[in-house]
Length: 209
Image (cartoon, rainbow, N blue to C red; front, side):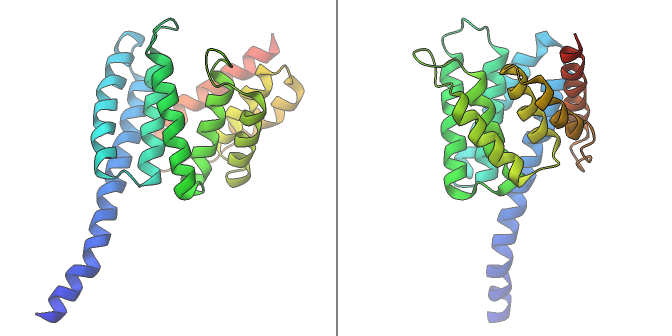
């Protein structure tokens, strides 16, 4: 009996980890589906439903940095699907920022530094004061931290290239676009990789004009 109980105590943390990993993978795959594979008219509704799921998962795993990161990504994507004049959009983005900061405080290195990359992307895409919290210097700081942790990743290179293009630094951006285009595929993230590669090609075409 003692041996059985010892086995149960060892197994329980492993089972808990499997649960949050499965939930994170669900959030990843559904996000890619709604972000890249559905029509524009269906995207907002799909992301809204996914945000409800993400809220449930975060309530179960409030201190799991990977869940915090994916909750934030879904929040930010949902905010992006709303009208630019929608007063609630900025609230979702601020909440995403808060969750990314919480994830970094716990362990910013998880998921190849995705929290840094995602937070950096918010800082350059959100308007600055007095409307929002946008800050070019902070964007550069966090995006570079994401790159340091994932120098060959498709997302880290894509977002830094997009940031540089936004600043008008086209020539420097080209090197990161090349790396993003050549980034290795991620097992289980096929839909996300396909969607991001299309965005990479769109940026390349954009700077050719």
